[in-house]
Image (cartoon, rainbow, N blue to C red; front, side, top):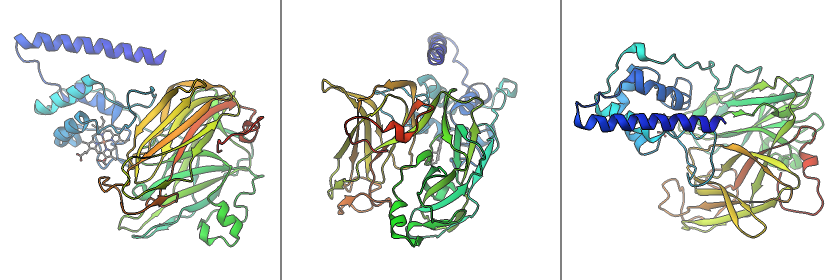
Length: 441
Ligand code: HEC
């Protein structure tokens, strides 16, 4: 419904604009676009989410004064499709969070720059877009913040850092929206926030409310466990990733007495820093019918030869129960090149759900424009390609054989995906089925 309506509006606008262009040819030149009338609405819609103070982008694009000096750069960045960042191959799938500009919006920004980047009449400006201070979701009902700041050194590799934070929830909660905000985003490669139910033994002897790494744990079994959990994810954060907002009737479940476990991957950049990451939660107004869980397709056995420029790794799994697919979030490191999610049908044909031309600096989630019911027995496949050649500008060492590991100089192959299942089911029950298969939790 919503989607076709938007498309309809676009078509109409396009037609009007084309007529104006045709009419303009023989007559006086069409007046160039102005900031307030033509440019600001695009910025509000597609750019301010990152280009405002405190967000991912280095400069704000909210006012004429901020935007004017960058008119040429903006025109170039949108013309080359570098901005807004989006890496899905347009041939496959439709995504609700696709921020791509229309051809018309791109030419408006180009014409504005070419025509002298005029301000125009401030009276034409749309009302300022309302952003919650510090959040891209509405004001959270609860903010769960790491109580102890983590000190990040100026140089070197930092082991995954954990901080377990008690929620003190006295009743079960359904989380409909969630956003992770590091206090020093420049040092956060990614963060995973796990939900640890009160009866979980995972990291039970680790400190609560204090930062630790696996190597600081005295129990060897817990050291190993740090990297392996069956706990459900609340959400994954990486630069450029959008907060989670589930449709009405769907939410993530956080039981009473649960802890949130922040698993932080910090990277160093020459400057020491300290970080206190928070998770903002908005609760569902009514108990939902469906529960959202995050599953993953992993291949830990990857061995990428030196110099290989298009090395393929795949993993398949079979869904044990019916599940409604909501979103996809591929994760690789510096040698990641392409990532694809497929359904392998019984007749052997392959349907591509998403293909991402991977960019390490932008790890995005891809939210399906229309959720998709996958029946029990559906074969899902994830395929990743790696560029370990010297032509990959991010490659730290093309002479190295690369295997699985936490650090960005090692590799990962993780296809996270979110599904909705009945509210009364949990991850354990979801995996109970007859027969066996390779789907990881
Ligand atoms: C998801 C966050 C995000 C969104 C949305 C986004 N940007 Fe950016 N933008 C960034 C970040 C981060 C950088 C700096 C790093 C980089 O250049 O990749 C950047 C850099 C830029 C640059 C500088 C490029 C250069 O040549 O140095 C321009 C211009 C720009 N953005 C314009 C835009 C415009 C116009 C939009 C909307 C149509 C937009 N961006 C949407 C995050 C975003």
